[in-house]
Length: 129
Image (tube, helix red, strand yellow):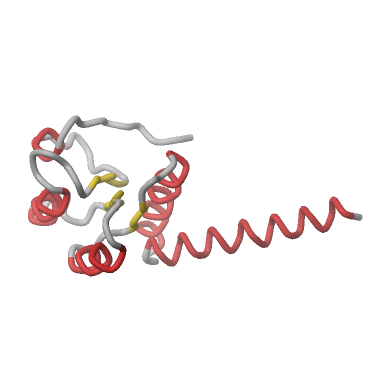
């Protein structure tokens, strides 16, 4: 089980993509050369076919500035650079689970993190016996 990835080379390509089906999530870099990610996201939010899709933003910008804009544009999850592929995938997982459960992706990510910590402690304790 995994995700099918439809890579795009730039913001205009991504926005021009004809959605054959609704994606589970869109991973969007805020800093792109042709059109910034916020502009692309506003266009996504204005398209009724994909306006509710979960969006994971990847950025190296100041968290306070990003947080304000992300809340305004209903971003499901923010991943800060430098970001590993695993961190991005966890953001997509949290966004996808959040969409299904109705929980915010941030709440899902926090719960996943807590569950992993509990399991790690339990396995560590069992291994110490």
